[in-house]
Image (cartoon, rainbow over all chains, first blue to last red; front, side, top):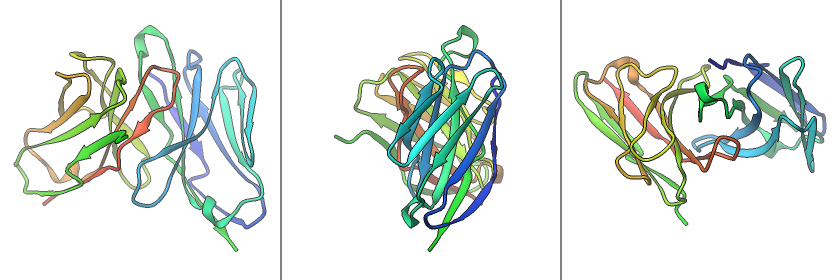
Length: 115
Length: 112
């Protein structure tokens, strides 16, 4: 089955700097890669996603890149702000028959933005 | 618009007791999921369902059972609770395999 690895587990950045979180996946059939943000005491919420037919996607200060050959994807947050402090999860999903519907998550990255 | 609602939000069980966690969604989503979240281990998939009447095992299904008798509800059962099942449980739903999943607020379960 699919295995998603996420690094680093914790990331401390100065306000205004950039943050990068990297994930790798094992199954080349995966074709959907979302990123979720989880604030304390809440459920995860989608912040950006990318499909396998796209190499990069951007939404204001957030961008995701995908390298299908290397089977890795990354989240980039620019001009970080204190409200970006949270736990971030990457995930992978596919339409293949034997893993139909599964949504597999990485272990998460605790991001701390210090003023 | 309620989205995904989990019941209860908190629960303390004694070892060996049973309970059912309820997840309800009002978005007419086909796919529903149960995850557990433990420190440093991310979100681990327990069971999931791709439609009414169907269920499938995730990566950590032992000790849990599920049912999806109605499309809008996905129930997670613990027949004989163990301290190792102390965790925060999240339910999620989505329309298909390549769209956003919506999460509930979580259920914090403590087994003593």
